[in-house]
Image 1 (cartoon, rainbow, N blue to C red):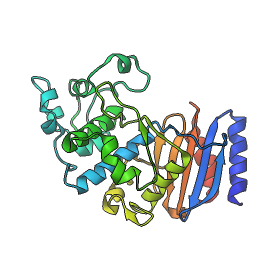
Image 2 (cartoon, rainbow, N blue to C red; image 1 turned 90 degrees about the vertical axis):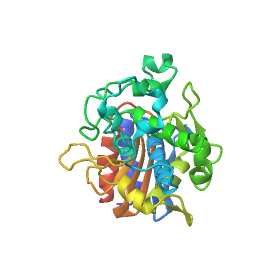
Image 3 (tube, rainbow, N blue to C red; image 1 turned 60 degrees about the horizontal axis):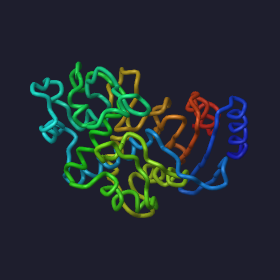
Length: 299
């Protein structure tokens, strides 16, 4: 079946289930082979947690530049924010734990539209005064603050905010000009969400990941780092399969950047394809995307 036929059937399924699809793009071997939009103009939309995968790449770049390392202790760089008697669990937190969502927090904390998000001023201090009930690495708990703190760490090491850090290193090479990214009350980049991109900018990022960290001949991030970031970094017997701010798909051969309301950059190495999706729905868009489109491609 031709890809257009597969997409037409998928689109009909989405309409029948009243799932709002905004933009949809497929690239194969670096070429756009399907490009659909509900609106005629390609508008920048909130990527939600797809932003996390951008911070993962930022971490990979920062590691190459010698600014941070996977095993360095986070608390060493934020001593002014620590409680008087920090727990041993907190003191043992590393960059790797932030990347893999294994910090040992006992709750996911606030973000998005939670009330505390509107009333808490200093988010860094808030993070370091939470309960870290498990040893780092003992359990997976998805938490936006892990990504936020990682971004703040890189900002602290560089002396510039994440937007300025990534402009020459990632955004400009990917043709993402004048990027938009929400900030916290203290002026730090949200990091975990709030990055606004078009479907083309989704696709450029995905193509760079698929091509091992290179975009249009320019090296952005090392292939070695991406090999780790885009493969499962959790114990094999855990139900969750997660890399460094990338989700591993159910086939365990492909992976994705994944955001709220159905934002996806699906990387399919076995097909040399990138599938980019921008939706606006609280239903299980991922299930429909996987079963009604991805599997039809023969992955």
